[in-house]
Image (cartoon, rainbow, N blue to C red; front, side, top):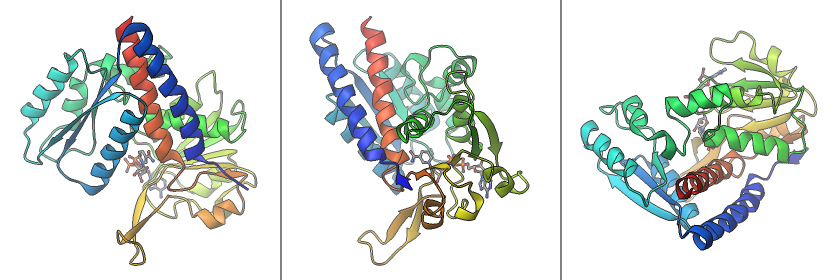
Length: 290
Ligand code: NAD
C-alpha cells in the first residue's frame, strides 16, 4: 500500500504556480490578487481561510482578507462581492462557506462574477464544466483528479465510485471523472444507496466525501483500489493540544491494508484544494492581463 502524499504533490504544483506568478509580473506587470471573505468565526472556516491566505502570499500573490462579523446582512455581503467584482487588483473572489443561516449562500455565489469565480461554484462555471467548455474547475474535485493521477493510476476505463452528492465535491468529481479525457465509468452513491459495499467492492477508485468517519472500511474495498478520502472530521482527543484530531471518512488502518494507494487525513486532499485555488487565481489573472 502506498500513501498518496498530497503535501508533496501540492508543493510541486505550488512551485510551478509561483514561477507562473513571477513571469506574469515580469511580462505584464500584473500581480494575481485573491479576495477571501469570511463571515463569522466558525473555527474550521477560520483555519481554512488562514491557510488559503498564507498559501496565496507564499505563491507571490496579493491576498485581500475581508473578515466580517456574524451579524453582517445579506445586502451588505452582496455589495462587497459586487465591489470586488469591479476591483481591477482582484482576480479571484472567494466566499468561505458555510455562511450564517440568515444569508442565502445561493444568492451570494450567484453574485460572484464568473470570470472571478476561482472556486468554480457559480452556475455559469458549473454549466461550462458539464458541457466541457473552458472554465474554472472546482478546486477539491480538480485536486482529486490530480491525486489519482499522481498515485500512478491511468483513470481511463476504470470504475470509480464516488460516495457523496454535494455540489462542491461529490457531483463535480463524478462529472470530472466521467469526462472524455478521464473516461472513467462512474457510480455516484449517496444516502439513498442500498448496499454501498456492493458498489465499492467493484471499484478501482473510491472517492469518499460523506462527512462521516468510518463510512468506508477495508472490507468494502477491492484489493489494490485507489482511495481518495475527502472527509475532514474533528474527533475529540484530550491528548492533542487543541483537544481534537482530524480523521477522514475512511477507516485508514483497515482501508490501507487492502488499498493499493490511499490519501491520509490530514495531508491528502486538503493541500490540493488550496493549490488548485491558487492555480485558478493565476489563470484568472492571466486572462485579465490579456
Ligand atoms: P455534504 O454533507 O454536503 O455531503 C455529504 C454527502 O455524503 C451527501 O450527499 C450524502 O448523501 C452522502 N452520505 C453521507 N453519509 C453517507 C453514507 N453513509 N453512505 C452514502 N452516502 C453518504 O458534504 P461535503 O461538503 O461534500 O463534504 C464532505 C466531507 O468532505 C466533509 O467532511 C467535508 O469537511 C470534507 N471536505 C473536505 C475538503 C478538503 O479540501 N479536504 C473540501 C470540501 C469538503
